[in-house]
Image (tube, rainbow over all chains, first blue to last red):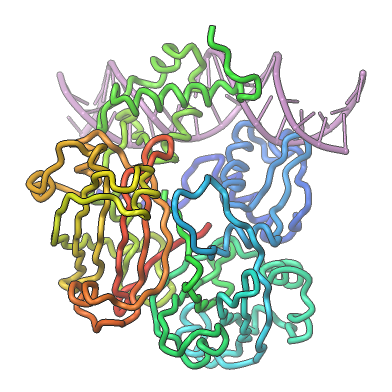
Length: 251
Length: 251
DNA sequence: CCCAATTTGTTCGTATGTATA
DNA sequence: TTATACATACGAACAAATTGG
């Protein structure tokens, strides 16, 4: 029979992991910053270095921390590369076999087509766990690879969470959208869930992507999540798969 | 003595991992079988138990081995559950948020529509790394969820690799296709790479899935791989996303 | 029901190797 | 070269799950 288990496992390294996560989430260690060395951390937590390392191992695997031998352990930062490898899964059509980790790695050109303050509709509200009608920012981007328009992104984020965001600040961002979230608002996207379906091109999508209206397009709904699985962004990407594929590895 | 390239990592636990993999691949330990206990394995490899455990850790993470406290360590076996969680990423349409690991977990009804011996076309040959014109088996399946046809799978496998496969043996298989590969041919699918695109329904797909010809469908090309990245199966799934989504988690 | 044997899981501490500045 | 920090390897002790008596 299923035993209620008084919640937390008494496992030490998970306790240490939780404490590390709390410090990172609270920005006591900011993105990019170096953590104290492992022996000091172990001592400060009152555990052996092996236990400390096991906690860090898991956070490294979850892309929360980054370790470099001889240098130290760092809080992971968003970058163009991270966006490309973790969150941008569109590639020029190509037949198998594909080399291991061959990823073309072309960073898309991003044009912001619109930035509006709106009220959350039902879908967006459910995804972001806000109330219908709550204020949200809706951003439209067009991404192109090698000059070819490939996806039309409609991004929805809570105005309450991104208090003070303006079109100007959004347009003048230096790097990726997730870098903006992280550096300007202290909100870190850790992972995302996606659901894809095939849809006929709407008039708008057809115009933005330069395909005939009604042509089959891939529609990917992405929910980006932060610490504790808290939703950060709801994004619908409409992808022209005439010359590109949407990638996924299962394993 | 055989000296490996000086550049090769001299890391002990990877050496142990390679030896374990070799024994598993050679079926010296068959799928489902129990390995010797860790202390014995460590001794037989001449390493400490910690080193042995690290090698096993990685194989567990790659779904090659399964550990159960108090019972032992086993060679992973294909099953309906494994297929569902690792390789079947279609779910009824549903809005976010989705509970963690909530996966509906309905196993699809599978109907085999055709089993043919053919010659590899260019795409299939490139994927399976055989020559164009080499003999292959081509199987067509229809998968349904809750009585609704959802995907039309066209599976291509090398006849040389699956020597002795017949329509009868295929139809009379007990479990999933990957279970058949594993139990009858000793070929284990470890992971897969997928590429998705949107396509208009062909006449055949429209008939099989019960949708209008030309309706947008999701076309997923999957290459299933075994030990050493060797290709096993090339599969094109044509998915009706009228009431279902294709899932993907990036993290 | 409890006990004992078996097997993996966790934690400890130490020593040594390797990458970096 | 030296100092620093992470990476690998060792082995021991105890905890927790499983199974069978």
